[in-house]
Length: 329
Image 1 (cartoon, rainbow, N blue to C red):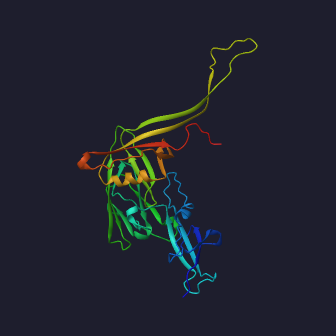
Image 2: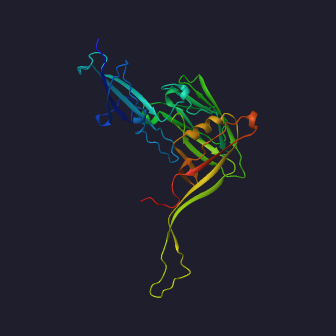
Image 3: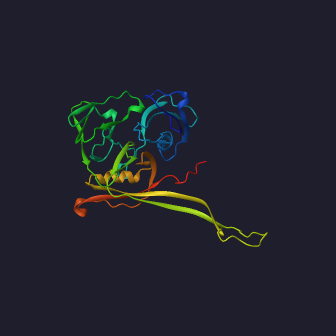
């Protein structure tokens, strides 16, 4: 039996269906020598694949997934490829999600409902979106009305966003047999006559876009930076200077807008959604008719419970991810 000395890996990353890659989809060729104290060669490919998942959002809910084909070849110390068990071809569906430390290596995330909380808060008379994984769902029933889920195998259909009609109340997610109930989601429709609700959209731990509405008080602010230099304002011809002109001149003025938002009263189930929002690298706010990128500046958050806090409200700080003055060149 040959002894493994080295492994080579070809990574193809592409759209479409599993195995439909072309030679132009080859993104990486890797080679790794086995460490003498180990029996196997391990390749960490997640960050390599992630570079090719385009996580952008403009209030459009699209399936941001990629197919990955990994072809592994095994070689002995003489550089001869194994005659058995090489090459090995595996196909994977890549999503921009993550697991927690306690989940262990390569955790299996949800294969049906792609969000961790089962309570949604929507403004009255406002529709919403429910992210699901098409491979594991046969139908979604909203207040007794069924939506059949079809999966054609294409990467652009793997994550689907089911429209939640305005003022819905109960959502049921069923397995591919259309009979086994997998999850029940409760929709709370909030009447907010005083404040303007704002929608934050983020990439959650499952790699899907998820919305959270902030219903209560919002506080806007602006942080300004600049530089100063001292100018010579003397008119040498008259040996005078104008008193209406300052010695200090300002330049490189820049400003960043910030906003603090409050969810309003929610249940304990919402702690998980807030946690994933805080951990997300990609967040957008629907603001004055635009979908704008933001950075969460809240760095510490207390998990709230009805026992400790009675009424639960989450307050988060956001900073718009661009300069107020357009300085793109």
